[in-house]
Structure formats: structure tokens, C-alpha cells
Amino acid sequence: MQYQGVLKKMATENLETVQYYLDMETDFLNMNQLLNKELEFHFITYECLSCGLEKEIYRQGFCKKCFFETAKAGDWIMRPELSKAHLGIEDRDLEYEKQAQLQPHIVYLANSSNVKVGVTRKNQVPTRWIDQGAHEAIEIVEVPNRYLAGITEVALKEHVADKTNWRKMLKNDIEDESLESWQEKLREFIPEEAKAYFIENNKETSINFPVEKYPLKPKSLNLKKQESYKGKLVGIKGQYFIFEDETVFNVRANEGLVVKIVVK
Image (cartoon, rainbow, N blue to C red; front, side, top):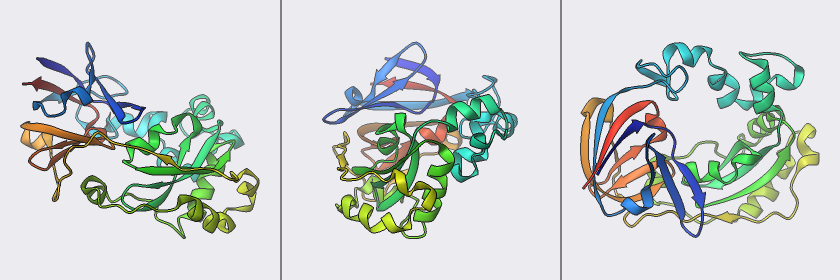
């Protein structure tokens, strides 16, 4: 069987084991069902996720023009502390920014390669944790807008990491931590504006990924450069496919690529 479409971040479902779904336009693949199967990936062309044109992808699935123009790629997305919709100040599209920024946001702790702090919209819990490959996570603050979440993250990352080591995450080189203890330890560093939104007596969420074999030395597949690849799928974690030969492929980092997938 073969499928063709533009790569987009996999949809997920947090069941006993995370279920992964890849939208290939005319087909919606449950990737868990393809574990232990031989897959071929072929790079065909590009398709910008914003304008839909066949233009080389610059970042985040967008062509260069769209990356610098679309509201979906504003600086406030990667740096939520720059959010200004609560002040009625436009970055690129105020209506879009109000919808995205003026809704409940969660500041959380997640453990993927190490304990890290992060921000997400409340309706993206636990999706955001799954995408980062976190095996455990906890909500620590719930605020009414993205700005408050952003300044809280900035304050807390002085005391805890804000990045995931993707190699350690994929090797499953992890330690269990008491995130409740971390939450209490970081409580004093929450900014005054957000202290009232601290979540009391919260519990960790555990996440199990469909991985049968973790790589000892993961090597990243550059499909644009290599153009084609064949391997046996042995796991999925975060937004990565893990293959038997220790090749790993980050679907999120390759959004906007049109690919053909052949299932043997």
C-alpha cells in the first residue's frame, strides 16, 4: 500500500498507550498499526501550510514569505511573554491573536529527558506533553491569558530547564522525578501577577509511548537531502518515528514536505 500527502504534526490520543494518527489527505493512518512493518519514505516536493503553494519550506511548515507574515508564526508563539493581545495591541492579526492568546493557558512541568517548564493552551493538555515525548507531566499554574503564562515561564526557567534533549528523550535515558515536589519547590519563584493561579494538590499524568526498541545512538533522517529512506518502524515517541537501524525522523520538523509512504 502507498499513501501520499503533505506532512503535518501527528494527531494523538492518550490511551493506555499513546495512539498516533498521520493525516495523508485521502487517508488517516493509525501509525501504531504500522509498527514492525517495513516503510519507505520518498520526498516529492513542498507545500506551505499557510498559502498552500509549492514553495520551499523555511520554518514551521511555512514558506519564507508566510513565516514572516502569517499570524500563526508570530514571535509570541515561541516566546509567549511577548503576547500583547490582552493590551489590544496587534502583532500581525489582532483578531487571531485575541482568539489564541486570550484563553486559559497552563504552565507545566514535564519530564522527557529532564524536568522542564513549558507553556501551552489548556485545550492542548496532554497533547503538548505527548509531542515533547514526556513520560510524566503536571500542571502547576492555570492563567487566563498567554502573557501571564509567558512571564511565569520566564521566571521559572531561571531555576529549571526549558528545553528537551531530544537524543536523551529518544534513548529513553530518563529518571522518574517527583513533579509534585518540583512544583512546590518552584512555587516561590512564580511572579506576583500569577501567584493566585497556582494549582494546589495537583497530581502527575503518566504517558506511555508505543516503542518496542529504543535507539542507543539515534541518527536523524534528513529526507530533503537523502530524498528516500527505507526502514522497519519499531517505535513512536514525541513526534518522532524510530526505526530498527536507529534512524529517527521528526515529523513536526518536516511539516510542509509532500511525501509518499510505501508500506511493505
